[in-house]
Image 1 (cartoon, rainbow, N blue to C red):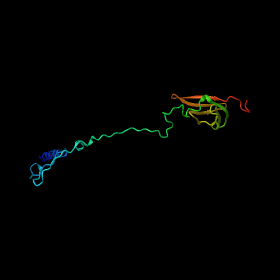
Image 2 (tube, helix red, strand yellow):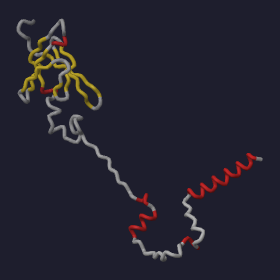
Image 3 (cartoon, rainbow, N blue to C red):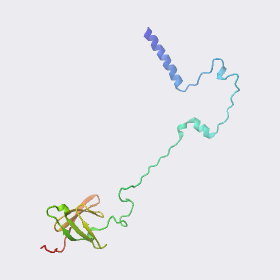
Length: 170
């Protein structure tokens, strides 16, 4: 019997708490009809205006605008810049000529090749791994230089050969 009484009290208390928590107004004092104190003057109601009414109705109506911002910082070249005007495509493969190669048989990674750009009249002393615009030196051999480049998502390789005989070689 005692457990039934406890269950009933718990049910009554939880129902009372639920009614109080869901926004029910406070009850008026016992002596005042309608909750108005007879000693206080009656409150006058005025029209609060459109801004106050909107805020009073739902304060969560404030709209928050957010924009996605993107910037290029240290990521290489701007993808919207024309390649024709930038120096990234220079030198072109067909404009390069190998003038000399200093090949090291013991340590091929120490080999140096001198390449000349015929249109710009510039010389480049390159080692394996060096970049010339979009061209990368992938290997240097005794009589040729292998250049790698990326075109349409594929890595391609091309070979520049030494054209003339160097002094002391046959």
